Length: 217
Length: 213
Image 1 (cartoon, each protein chain N blue to C red):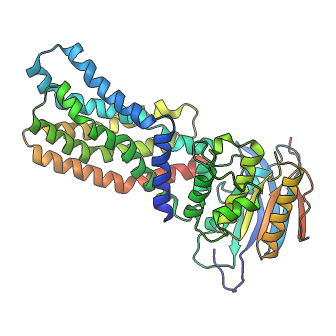
Image 2 (cartoon, each protein chain N blue to C red):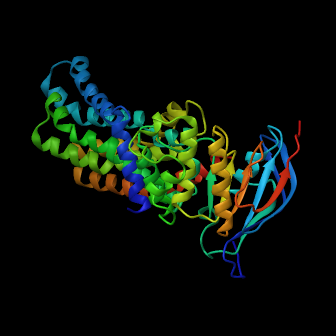
Image 3 (spheres, one colour):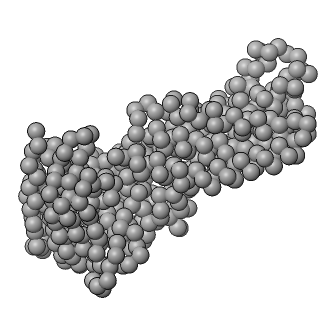
């Protein structure tokens, strides 16, 4: 097994072994959709109209919640320092951690969307668009999140700060994400979302690795 | 990382090194030549800058002034991939088994050393591969950290108090591991408060850092 895939496999294994943190995030995601009808009222038409926005808000909050664990656990047990001496560059280490993080925090959310579709009375076509939109947009959230997590890893209780730093950057993702579900020009919104994800995923490993390197001094 | 001469193993050249942390000058004027087959002991009171010097050698801390060069060895290989760092924190995941932890580092750093099972046997953890690392004692965790050095070959070992938390037999093990490593052309920098008996005996240099209080 190559070093890259070993790192991805380790992080996935840890996420499912450490008391099911990945599962907790999914429950949180679903809980927001459970709470919404109580707050808004059981008006099915209104719920369906708000559904794209609610799904993206739920996704954003869940991802921000999971952000802190990206580098902090490794920093605490000393493996982050050792990862800098790994057989692959730190940028590749960050990229591997990004992939693993997306697989354990974003993919379960996408799998849980049928539940939200029922709770928010979406029709099947809208559910399909939601899956597509989340699949294209969540990589950008992870990529932005990695930069925030890397910048704040040296600070005690930096997790909340990372979320505050990243939330404004995530606004375009939410705009195009919602647009890709229910906008007038859903197709072009989806393409822009995809472009956003591609660019941030390409830049993020380098930015996060730089932050990790300088953060130690 | 320029190297013209074809040495079998890299050597570390340190020139006029000065380190500061938190605005406070820790050490200055450090000159050091770490050649293959050498062991350097870093000694000194708490706060003298032993660990900081080790981290600077590892390329983690940037020196205030002076240079650290790695000469010889495999050209083009980045310096950080030629050193093994052993820190008080083990870098092992409590929720993964001993074997999973070691296999991970072996895959990540390159399977250029012992097999995982053989390395565990060597550090006295044979038969414990299937238990979670979180159930190990501090000393056993230290031994697992030492096993990490054995599964991937790196020419230069930078060890921060490798014998802490270890029993007498473990201290002898550390001496034997360092001895075998330098006998095979490696080199080691070791921070320590106690004497470590290197077996077989090697060229040992002691660098004592003063307190700067």
